[in-house]
Image (cartoon, rainbow, N blue to C red; front, side, top):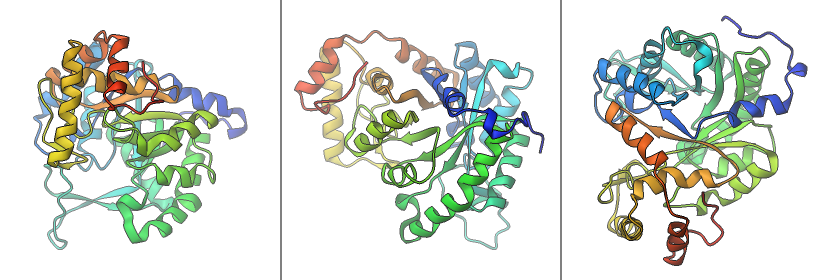
Length: 345
């Protein structure tokens, strides 16, 4: 593995490591959709989306081996080939290894329209090192700015959570810290969909950054309140992902059909409609409010929005730049749609 910087850890202060995440742009490109999440994306369309985002000023790209079983990383590497490395930053993840699907194991529906490959969890030290080496090869780089431990927690692992957490603390995170000290990554953290595991890890292992998907959004803040407060105290940067809650607030005119990667029930859709109604009274898009809302919190460094086409890139850029009246947030509070103490832009 080629190391970008072999300076000892003692010369890389915590302040320097944390600044990696603090330098992120307001909007980051989420790479799961170009890994054929839920539906196939043509190669040309995927590459055009990445390059168009770069053209519009998006400078951070997030991916993972899991996203299309390497397809997202490979497409990012191809799209960014020839672009000066200092012009963009990358985050990827560890915790799964990719294998060929030979038919001997029943196919798992992970949501990616990709044949012939599968992903298996591996939080061992060796698994982390192998994963990073493969990711760097696909991304065509010798380093990433941020490396995240992917999908630990009871939400994913159920009864195996305790043993997975122990291995994460004993093997995975120390291996990631070593990679950070070697300059293979600039900052380390977690990439998860739940608060509880973050609250378990933070007292036991120092982190620079946490990507939290779907829990600190316009639609919901309750299941992230403790983490957000702790992140401010410990100066841990939060990358908020899933700002539309799996598409629920992603459309311009009306709520979407999905929430938390599953069909939304009637109560969820009814509450989502209230956001659309409230935003329309101020002449703004609920989707724009959803994209901008997380940035009001001092812990949040960037909003990671999954994008699969140039049209979606244009839409996200326009929503991020839309002018939202301060009275909007007060109106949402008065309607009982925002926590009383929610931080707003």
